[in-house]
Image 1 (cartoon, each protein chain N blue to C red):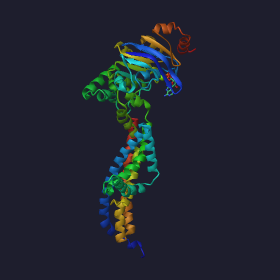
Image 2 (cartoon, helix red, strand yellow; image 1 turned 90 degrees about the vertical axis):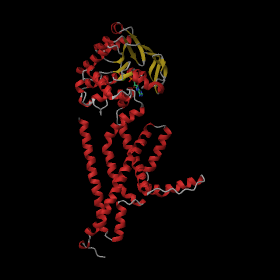
Image 3 (cartoon, rainbow over the protein chains, first blue to last red; image 1 turned 60 degrees about the vertical axis):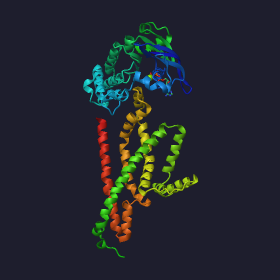
Image 4 (tube, rainbow over the protein chains, first blue to last red; image 1 turned 90 degrees about the horizontal axis):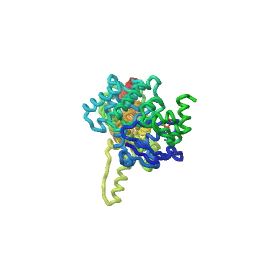
Length: 242
Length: 238
Ligand SMILES: Nc1ncnc2c1ncn2[C@@H]1O[C@H](COP(=O)(O)OP(=O)(O)OP(=O)(O)O)[C@@H](O)[C@H]1O
Ligand SMILES: [Mg+2]
């Protein structure tokens, strides 16, 4: 799906991403872990062109991405879920979900509504369709945000710390939905601090630090026998609190 | 002449002046409606231009804003009404055409109000746009909307919701500022009153009625604005 070569991103003189080369295959779930400020968000945002890379090349299904030319088309196929949900506060839950299908994909209202209800059922929120985002809990809002992204029928979803803004007891319901997506075969790139979840769902784990991909591999290998010292330190800090 | 309370003729003055003021009030409302609509449009365009346009264009807009905010509305009105047609004729003359462009008082008045208020309102609108979380723009872009669609569908509605009270105050101010249009020969309330007073010498009566007319126009309007503000802040809480 994505083939990334020597991706580099600078903000002024700060190098945030350094020479990242990575592949994300169709149907694969990749989780990206690493300390704060290591460039995880920036990396995800380069994939859907929210950020313009300073150097390097990104191929999406074989085509080289080129900022203005492809961004709209690309974003219809690669959805994104944010840490802060970013639901549209002036719309009801239903309208949040059906808005893009109606106005971007020009789906007739009736069909968009049917689709929205299907997706709300999938995330377990059919009964909240008429409410406004501000009336929902964080976990519910994030599930709506996932439904909203799914409504564009994307080929891939990017998640940037989807559970980091949630109270601990609400994390589970969101992860549950994401596990369901995995079973449906959705391609996903997930930035997360939920190590148990990452170990569970990923085909592939990437550990980033200071703009580098320090280590990547299968979850068993990364979590049980990390090769790199820095990976080990990071996991110890997160898992054992040392 | 010695004026005593007994020598005031409110009833007599009302007989002619009140119907005239009612006519004038219609004109004032029309002017305000048109002026405010165009000012809002101008405000949005200036705000969006100053935020997102090509840099040299942004600088030009800022210069224009400084000119408008640095001169009184009355001077702008007079300039549009008397000077702009002359300039246009001069310009046409330079290209060998002989023209006699004129601007109607109403058009000049509405244009002046729209430009002047547009500039002030653009600052409020710009603030409104900036107050919306960047995440809203990103979410919209990520759903496949373009930048322009995002602005129109997602950002502006939210920005406007938060600045309705401020814009409402401009509306009430504008209705009162239409009195300046008397100086460009718009037959609004002040001009009618002046004419009447100078013909009848019912000075006290005439201008008292004028003040009342403005009160009747602006007080209910400002209460409407408050009501809308209240409704909006309530719906915010949901
Ligand atoms: N718009 C920006 N301008 C300048 N520097 C930025 C900008 N965005 C991010 N950075 C810097 O880039 C670095 C990487 O940021 P990024 O958000 O990608 O990290 P992250 O791994 O997602 O961290 P976190 O876990 O805190 O979300 C940080 O040092 C950050 O300060
Ligand atoms: Mg981040």
